[in-house]
Image (cartoon, rainbow, N blue to C red; front, side):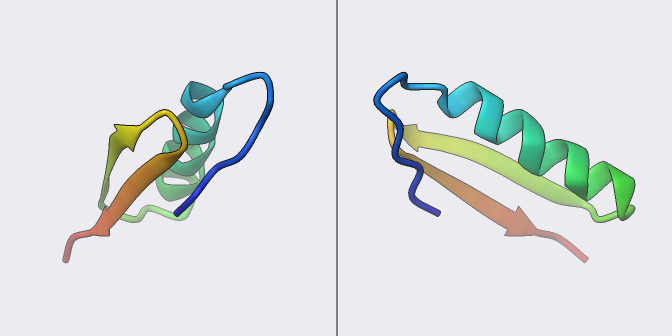
Length: 44
């Protein structure tokens, strides 16, 4: 996933992805790759 923002709020994006995963009871792992990229891994 690529995140673009002039305010560099990548940590907000990571929190949102984790929150949605928790809400839908998905086992996932979110890794920050750079200031504009994250990796979301769905584990079963």
